[in-house]
Structures are given as structure tokens and as C-alpha cells.
Amino acid sequence: MSHPPTILIVGGGPAGLSAAAAAAEVGASVMLCEEQPTPGGQLIYRAQPVDTGSGGGAERPEILAKRLVEAALSAGAVLKPGVLVAGRYGDGEILLVGPGRTWTVTPDAVILATGSTDLPFPFPGATSPGVFSCRAVKILLNQWRVLPGRRFAIVGAGADAEDLAVDILLGGGEVVWSGIAPPPLFQTWGRDGVETLSIGPSHFEVDVIAIAVGRQADFALAAMSGAKLGFAPELGGWIPIADDRMQCPEQAIFVAGDAAGIGSVAVAMAEGRLTGLAAAASLGLTGAHVLDEAREAGGAELVWRGDVRRGLEPSHVQPFT
Amino acid sequence: MIGVNMGENRQTGTREPGVTFACRCEEVRNEEIAAAVLAGSRSIDDVKRRTRAGMGACQGIFCMPTIAAIVAQATGTPIGRLAPMTARPPVRPIPIERLAEMDDGGRETGWR
Amino acid sequence: MVEDDQTTAHGAGRITEHALLAPLQTAAIESFFFDGVEVEGRVGEPIAAALLAAGQRIFRTMPEYGDPRGGYCMVGRCSDCLVVVNGVPGVRACMSPVTGGLHVQTQYGLGEFHGDEPDWLQG
Image (cartoon, rainbow over all chains, first blue to last red; front, side, top):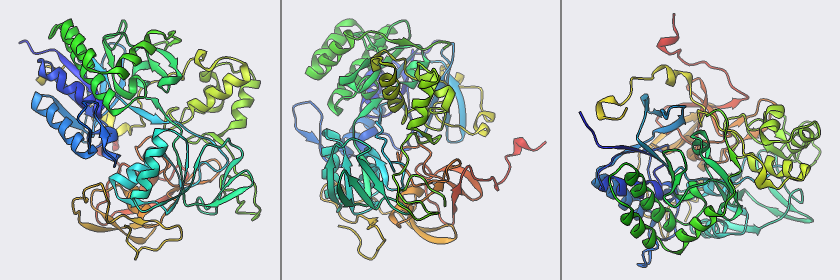
């Protein structure tokens, strides 16, 4: 009995969902596993409109998430929210842990769209209750409509920090301080949680401190799969080194989105689409011209990311995979 | 509750700077990372073995960049030349109960 | 806009109106217990969200130094939000949904297991 080639997609954010739709459209048997109970990745906890890069203006994140989910489903992909891809073992066997079921699969190809994690910012008192990562504050404000306090300080000075500042204001909070300061000049004090923030000689009364100093790729599964890693500061740090077909050499592992280097939602979608097609092409389901079209349609950020990857020295391959 | 991270010593009532943890899961202080390098660690993995930093629930997600920065600075190695922390399954803590439930797999759908 | 009847020492509460986001689908309000005290939660939201909205910032203490923790990542990775639920420690409050009548407690250190043993462990 023959069956279509199987592609496992790890992560149901903009990249993973786009990859699922693209691969399923050309005939792959696609299963997408998303650790969280609701697919959508960062779209689930963003409030402000998101540029999708299609030239049509910005879309509301909740609408975009629904659209991407529907596209994947109607293309025939199977979506499994609440299922964690827990590890990859020697012969390509992959452990899945879901509510009520634990099992393994050995797909013909794997796309890692595992996204990113927030970078830490250690300082005296950083583990106090009331100190959260940037995306944690967004999850509380935007996904659950909870204010963990009224007066916020934001550490960081990039797009994430700016976006968060607006989210806080939209949620009814106040941004008391935001910027960058080097620890240990940056300290927090309080009895049961954050109360005072000291920056050098200045003191601020705050309830919440949000750490928004950037994101880094979640590359654990890629490393386990034997992908070579390289250090690219402009893409958030260590990333799996993928070739022009978004494939990590010598492995049937593909990467897309933040997991392949920190970037925008628009490029995550474009890269996801390219990677879905590339994985399908590697299994004979489509051809190189389709990949070229997808790459051209992906825009300048997609091209730039490929340039950065091509210039990377593979610094490391994990032993004993 | 005893606390070292709050800036106020709950036992003595005095105000002192809280501790800076490099690894929040295993409560490993920045000083311990530096001490590991002084004791001979030259890699992130070796620091992990000496201090337990990176062995906790997050498996290094929230501490590896800090460890990398300290090792890079203390050894004079460019951070990009350090090998990142070795990653092993499972990526998150899983109750053994879940593994005991493991079934035969998705053969019925063509997924081997 | 924030509900004003919820006064906590540090201004926590629930957001009732939002200029951009569509209202949350109305979820039933259920009470659960935290350290014996009744807490209001929306069914399906994570325990962590309900506790933080109610002004509860400390979820656990740490085994080595005893420091209080109260959630950090909210995506199930960091272990700062571990609580004891119905006698079982090590439960991620940020990944576990509120259901009515849950008994949630502060986890001190690694906690102690007072739940039901799974079938396969018995003999």
C-alpha cells in the first residue's frame, strides 16, 4: 500500500502554518504539531495590526491566525494543537506527547518552525515575582486580558519593546520607564514582588518589569537532528545553517521562521511557504521552478536572510546524535 | 520565606542588592559561572556540568546566552566560536507516566 | 479600561475593553481555591492568568534559596509558575486551565506528591 510522502511540521505559528498549506497543496501528507493549545504562534498574543508583506496593508493578528489555520486545513494538512514534539532520536524517530496520547512517528521530512524564545536579562532581583519576559506580558494583556500590575518598566529598545509599550497602553497600563541600562546599575527591590526599580541613582515605583531585549531561535530540535549551527548576531544568535532550499545539509531537516533566524511575521510566512514547497520538492512532489518563484515572491528580507546564512561559518555540530 | 532575590533580607530586614542568577531554573549565580571558568571550564557544556546551569526545566533556553557571554569574556573567545549547549530529548520535562502510556505509533495513517 | 472593583496592592486586574482586540468570548466564571482562598477565574484561562488578575504574585518558592517566584515566560518553559494542583506538584500554572473547584496551592521547593498514584505504578 503506497501513501503520500509524509512531512511533520513542528510549530504552528506563521511559518509552520504557511509551510503546512504549501506542502499539503502539492500533495504531501502533512501533520503539524503545536505545543500550545491554540495554533497561531506569536499572532495569538499580538494586539496591533501585522504587516504580512503582501503589499495589502496590515492585518489584525487574530484574523491572520484564523486565515492561516484555515488555509492549512483546507489544503489537507492535519493540525494537532496541544501536541509537543519532545525529541528526535537516532534514526529519525520523533517523540510526540499530546493530551491523552504519547507516540512516535518517522516522517519522510521534518520542518522545524519552532519559533523563538525571549533573551534573558539577568540583574539583581530579576527572578522576583513581577518580572516577566516580553511575550509573557503580551500573553497576559492580549491573550487573557489580564493586567499583572499598572506601572510597567520595559528593558530593551527594539521593535519588540516598542510594540509592547503600545500594548501596555492599550491595556490600560502605564509605562513608567523604558530603555536600556546595564546591570548591576539596574536593580529591583520589593517584599513579595517588584516594588521599586533602581537605575543608578534614580528610583521608580513599578509593579511589572518586562524584559524585551530580543529573541533567539529555538534550535534544540535542529541540534538534536545533527544540523550545523552558526552564530549570526543579526538573526538573534545561533541558528541552524540552512541552504538555499531551507534544508540543513545531510539531514532531512528544514527550518523556517524565527527558528531559522529572528525576523518579521511577513518573512516567517514567506519562508514557511518556501520551506513547505522545498520539503515537498525533496520528496519529488514539485520542482525547482516553483521554489524559485516562491523565493522571488518572498521579498527582500527573505533574500537577505539567505545571504547571512551563506556567509556563516558552521561553528558546531552536536556530537552523539 | 527566605529570599535572596528581593533586595530586602526578610530575616534581617536590611536592604541589600538581590542576587543575579545566570540560571533561574537551578538557581546558579553569575559568580558561580565565573568560578567554573576559573576552575578550568572552557565550554558552555563544561560550565553546565560543573554548576548545573542549563540542566533545569528550561534546558538552557533562559541561561545559555548569559553563560555564553561570561565564558566568552572570561576566556577571550569570540562568542560565536563557542559551541552552544548540547540539546538532548526531551525538550521539556515530561512525567514518566506519559512515556509509560506510549503506543504503537501512527502506522495506520501511513506515518511510520 | 480595567475593572475598578478589583483593587490589589499593585494594581492588577482584568481588562474589560480594548481599542483593538475583539472581546473575549464570554467564558463562564468559576471559582477555584488558592491556598484555601477562593479565587475567581474564567473557565479555560490558565491558572496563572487568574491568579495574577486576582493580585496573587507568588506561585512557588525555590528549593535552594527559598526565593519566591511568580511566573516569567508564560509559555510553559521556565518553571517559575509551578503550583500544586489537587495534591500534585510540578503543575505549570501557565499551561493548565482553570476548572471549577480546583485546589491550587503554593509549591514550596519541589513540593510533595499527595495525589492519586497512577494505575500502572501499583504492583
